[in-house]
Image (cartoon, rainbow, N blue to C red; front, top):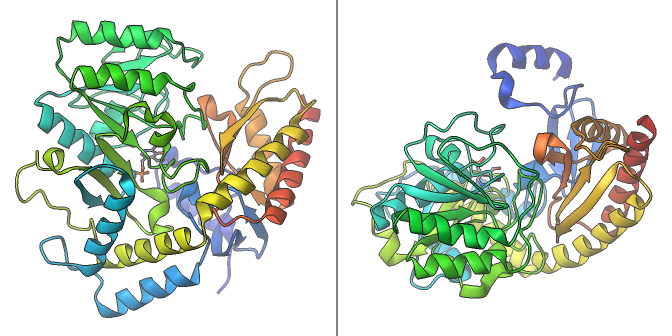
Length: 434
Ligand code: PLP
């Protein structure tokens, strides 16, 4: 087989939407992976610090997952939720027990967007209202209702969603179409704002949806105590809390298995959504809620591909590996070392505004030296330079100025050190450019 990424790129441009957004100017076609490494069509090897947007949770081509997928596919690929499925029941049991939600039920979808759609549908049906609260700068997906709670105009150009969304962030209030973006600072004034907003809506709000650490938003966490304070207000008003754990789940943030546990003033969320890493690349999403909330939907609310046996088998093998090898503990230890190392190599580089994160979810925010303005140009340059050196990282945040680092959770200390050195080199190149 001959590989020609350049002609594949031309074909890509002719049939795929331009807004899909390839990361690299020189197209990159990945053909295979192993462990924490991937290879391109030209045979170049890269250390993978992004894990396919946090989907490769444990490792590329993990033999346990590959074997489980092949064995299940050899038996039966699809049955649908109208029949009993052993892998689906077993994975639901594991996730329900891990969720922290009492009397938990799990509904499987095939993506994070659909998981959030289902959570919003459940919460609005349960509370009998289509009003929801969302955080500014959030990202929850691209369906009609998910864009309705995605609080950044550059990720969702219009709010035609059937939901009525109220935004909470940094003391700024906006209703319906997005208010102008602010600098993203969270302030204590939010809590007073929330009380105020709820008085005005006379208790009509169904739920708040929030990411414990904003993912696409640039790996930004709210200050300690803010979500616990929100939660107290919402609980008093009977409003449901939806924790979008699509990026933060499964111990990636190191300290906790779920992101909500870092804000656990008032216990588990009412609804928890998950996706990305659990299938190690296979399409699994889902929502967990206590039975009373889950039963708010009418009978026969099925999902054709949700809970498909092959993906469930992958999820079971992947989750088993994660727990047996204590990868959350590894994310804490190796992630801690990596953050320290990245802070050390960034010291003195004024192209870096901040290195932040928890566990193996690390953001490096880049700015234009001198002006301090977010610099997507610097991020693009670092991405390209790192790729030339053999390292793949992601980007996100306002305007795409934050480098996002989220390697498979089996990352070794040696790999973390090697990646930090390669990144240091790329950051110095960006520093010299401006
Ligand atoms: N929620 C969060 C926090 C996400 O980061 C994403 C995707 O990046 C989604 C939801 C949407 O997930 P998917 O792309 O699987 O539909």
